[in-house]
Length: 552
Image 1: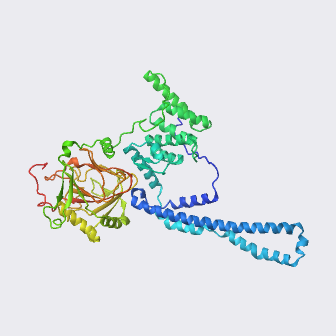
Image 2: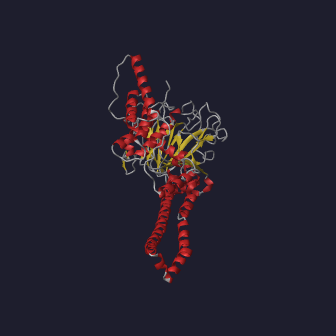
Image 3: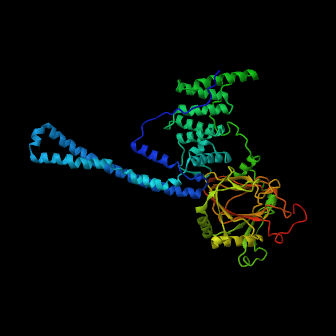
């Protein structure tokens, strides 16, 4: 038996595109070949694309107007000459007998037709193409589109949203006219399919099929959707439903090059399994495929379920007994001169490990200045390779970041000094202020800020020891999602603009506090801006002396 599983690239053309759409599509395709990657990881940079698109739309309208003006002129010539030639051809000799007609014929053919030819040869698209060329370096590419699609799937998983809710723009607490069409859903499914992610492929291809069955118009054909969907369902181990979907495909397209072979293979495989398990055939469920129909495959993250539950606000271990131990107070940094006249407001977020939040720490003006300085430098956020100590990008951290020095602007220096005054720790050996902006589905999966014993070279190049503490500034409110969560002890801290949170990563002994493993939840709706200061051990010897035990 020859197995014909899989699918190929048969393309179905549906309808004709106008000259204008063909022109614009070809220009866009050209412009997307040389672009900066991973634009989707930063909302801050994506906002520039909004204005770029607005400018391109205006340029496109000017092009259309020029084309219409040109066409109107050509039509006017054609109408005038059509009437003229009807008269001249009715009696050519009689027409030319008049000397004015003879002169005007010579003039038209020698001068006016040449002018018309020049008009027709003019290309109003030159201005539009030139404008596109200026902006093409900022256009997203295929990697950006794929990354944005995967970000939607990440949000779908974390916040348990079904594909239909997404396609209708119904997110928690948000109702929008941002909808996904049949073709959008199909492209989402195909992105997952091409990545061998059949779990998400099934969810999105099923949604595309549902919307098509409900009468929505689309470019993609039902046969193409069923082709991808039936094979994805087979990969999820649901042979009865794969057979049903393949039969639908064969009914629509009996000559389909793979469907017949796939159907025979699926049926034979199902019969073999039923014989081996001594079971009777059970028809597939009539319930549509939706979130929960199939189990989501396990991945590399052991605390995936608890982490995502905390992101949804579930499983938070805030008991009444613990809440009674949390207080708020004014904090003057042990009578630090910078804070004596204006102490900061301090709130306990968690008792053990102790996490505090400082209110009104950054003004709106300071936040805007920090963002202004960081925005031109935003690059894909990196993590330090525990083996080499070298910074590198990672799929579990999706954001863009920039590093700012205190000497660059008085605001940065002022923030650094404020952090030192509040914590009582020197920032002379701290890392630069890191500014991060989380884009579509932006996240940082559970991680430690400090280096563990199995990665002794993580901060060796810095020569300042381990990261003793983390000071995290929230520089924006987030409409939905974006919490900082601690899966080990079930805490969730939500962003509040202008506030900061602080915790120690190391005990006084220098041993790592493994409870501080934390994560930045995916941003569901909104833009999340943060900045953080990682404070290191060196220089803290007298500011935070060692304790008597490992866990002091």
